Image (cartoon, rainbow, N blue to C red; front, side, top):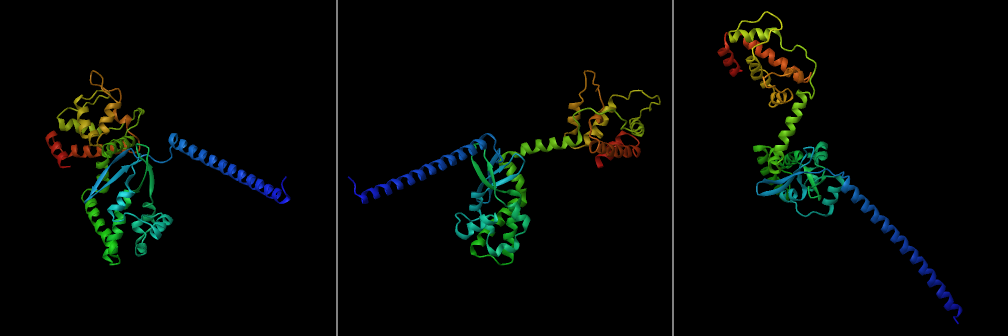
Length: 329
């Protein structure tokens, strides 16, 4: 038989055991819930990623340093943080420097108090760290490349003002080396070459330009080439201008128009017009090229070029003079 004292201790121990059991169970439930949240977040990020992807990757060489660089799908160019900080002479960081960098969302090489007067708000915003995904799925952190030359200017100006300490002077020297590289080629061009984005960039730029000049569908025909244009064209070719309406112009005149009118538009526009308005077996086209031009930009450019060519034809007595004037222009 247990004494009253022993019974009391048994009751207390049982009570403590129950409390601990409930706490462990609750903690286990919380950990399970936390694990579920983490898994759910990982699955969502895997199948519905919100972190931007950088499909173009390479290595940028600046002075003695090699820095990984990337281009996002929207064309944003980035330099990865870790290697850039090493190039700037800032490897490991910690303490108040790291905390201020986190609090103000600034690169650590710009957190010093003596640099504060040089920090404009737009520089702070532009140099905010950006998290992105690599093609292998891993995440990386980088700085927007466009803002880095501005950050280098801060150090060079501060060096000129003689407010830098010994460690910062090393960073300023690195900035000077990078600025020399930027000045020779341009940072965007360096990154585009390193990542291979230059080829995609050219295709994207051309596509955006064509969208401004060329419609996907044919527009209703309206008269765009004035009679005076054809009269002057006949004159410099030594032809007799037809007075009967509806008479077709010589087929060669189409080549003349392509060469001196459409081909003077931005590169790629004439090729796109030919693609949308192909010639048949007889060399004829179903529509006029200008029926595919946009009204606001494409046709305005056409009008300007027609006026220019017509004016030069007016002051030319023959085709040879016209060609000479066009070459000078």
